[in-house]
Image 1 (cartoon, rainbow, N blue to C red):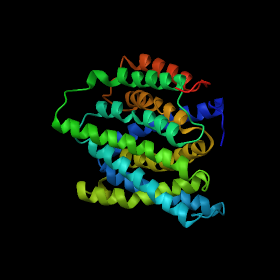
Image 2: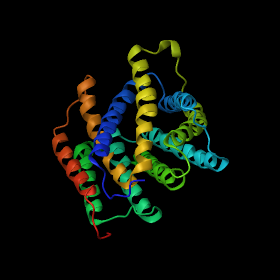
Image 3: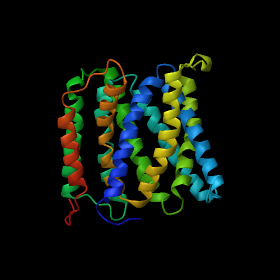
Image 4: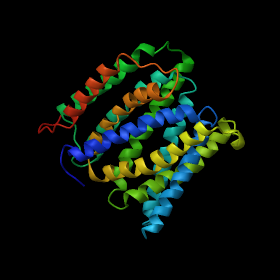
Length: 301
């Protein structure tokens, strides 16, 4: 693991690229959910990407599982990952997408606090706290106008989204704490994908109507392929490589760029999507925040 308190330029550029791809994933999901229920899509996506990871590992001559202990940790990661998606997609049925975008990005704060408490050398400091707050303000500026009125149903959705954010953070922290020293990035990704499939499919069967495969349109099939191959396979391989090498609190902070790219790409690629005037200010705030987060401090917060 790299013990520096900042990401090198190559890692920063890779994180920004991943955020562009994940922003594109927001567009792809908007397209695919027209015809494929989101939880079923998430389960099927994990299954397909898991098969791709397994094939790559076999070709490279890598064992799929290192030990029973690692497999048990992998089961926990898969359950956390599946629960995260279940909470987010179920929560979106009760609350607004704009509220989801704000509440979901409490995730970097949870990672930073958790890393400070349970990981060695990944400490909170004043620059990191300031940077997280600046970046979060950027997200709020982008989406607060469409926050909407709160009600009992909306609050239920908000709570589920917050639980999803916590699940996302706990998955990252658990992997860093228990698996980076005993498993390769590909093995960790395989665990996450394969063990999440049963949970996602079961919840989908209980809550969603199954799609008719013969009725799927070309844009939906292409968007789903993007989610499987580019996101769940290739981008996650890169993500887990970064988790193995660098401090997760800094990596998680850079995910603040994702909704900004999602908004821009939605406007660029989807008809009827408006470009938010606040996007430029949001980008400035997030960039300033990441400069602060990636600036080491000798004094803990």
